[in-house]
Amino acid sequence: MTQKLLFVCLGNICRSPAAEGVFLHLLEQQEIHDHFVVDSAGTGSWHVGNAADKRMQAAANRRGIHLPSRARQIDLNDLETFDLVLTMDQHNLTAVKGLAQEAGKRANARIEPMLSFCRRFSESEVPDPYYGGDAGFEHVLDLLEDACEGLLEALRSPEWATPPRQS
Image 1 (cartoon, rainbow, N blue to C red):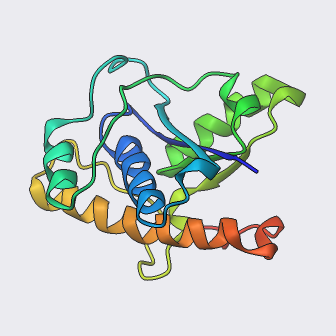
Image 2: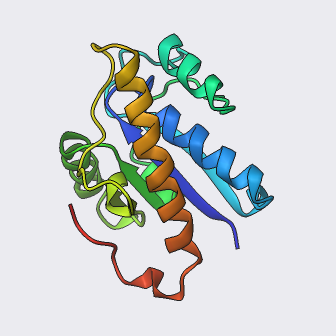
């Protein structure tokens, strides 16, 4: 069965494309990419069509991670198409839940905070590195690597029907 995952942040040029890239990298390493459809989107529209931020691309490249997506804005259809929507912070979570309310019964996607899947880190939000330095991009990748490993473990678990810890 193919599982469809959508990673969501604000502008879709830093955190969510990084989460998408990290998860795709993990799937490739484990040779299970055929079982997933993975994408990313932003709650805002101002970066639509742009590649990931060059600083995030550079940080990801240093880890052997490719960021293939172009920025796009989440829409109502995403909540019908994807099985799981993973948000990077509370603002994104609130925005996506609001969109789900707007979509009504069409919204089938489960909506979860990304870092609810972390095993090593205790942070509840992926900080936006856009206005910071290189260390911020590296920290975001550290968080996302942890969360993506936990996410994949959860998706393979028979207990997946039980929600992960809430942030």
